[in-house]
Image (tube, rainbow, N blue to C red; front, side, top):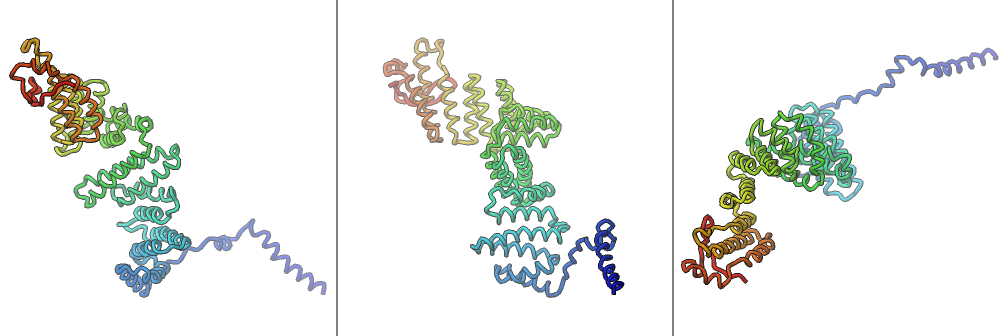
Length: 467
């Protein structure tokens, strides 16, 4: 009996000792058992294919609720079968999400929309037409659409960014646009941390959209142009477009890319877009680009640089060069012509100033500033000399104020927003009109209700006495 008990005790103790030693010297068989087995490949059955066809037909007919149950079955049992499982599934989930008011159900569907993209990557990420990068873009869009309570949408950023980095101009327009929006959200949540990132994302996406908007072979060029305008407005209103901050980010970039025209033009356009065109970095980029290949943008940048340095003739030369490179119907044409007119006014070359102001009005008739500038040119002119008109020259030269006031009146007609400024100068210069006595003292040929101001002005006006 004692021997039997001893055997039983030994039998119990041996397994216990074996278990104690096992972690120190694990057996290969035990190690293999700890590895998680891969999920078996889903089986593709005839029933699955039949259900996919039924789901697709229901989705085509917008019978989303009828399609859901069978769709969930094929999504679960044969997710590798066909891309339509995911494209149809996205439509079904969107419909059900928009229809339900139950917060828990909304959360379930939102998570399903994102998880669907993960499963699609797993089974179809090698698709040559819709690869992993494309699906990541869809995943980012799904998160932004369905996770409405997340104001920043930070999880979507990495998915969208990776997608855009890989696909570039092959990205969906929605993905490009959403990347900038999410980047803006991050910047707004922490400007110091995400400011540089937001500028870089805006610049990258802006370049892609600009390329697509101007590509005649791209069928959605107009939509790309609209998205480009939208991110431009977002960036300009963001506050990230601080000129000093931009200079910190792009000064070394311009130096390093002084021989890369494409990169220089991107910087020029960025600075121009956010009105930082008085920056030395902008000037440096313009000058470097102009040496490589003169363009409208580089010529304008050099012109602005000359204006800042008061190199007026250099500025005129560069603006004229820009005009030779610009499209005839480009909106900027009137601006360049006006700037030349302004420079000539500064140089007191009033006749040339009027010539370019009138050319600017031909390009854009609704510019009160052009009429104002012409008025200032008239008011500063003295077309009557004492050599020809003797003592009467002083009185005759007052007639230029009639012509000047006429221009100020035209300015507020075409641009009512500047009426207050125009009225101010009308009141000021009307004080310099000839008096009634002086008007009577004018030569007979200048009498009557109308009068042609002489010299280079040669404008018909109405006689009015100073008040």
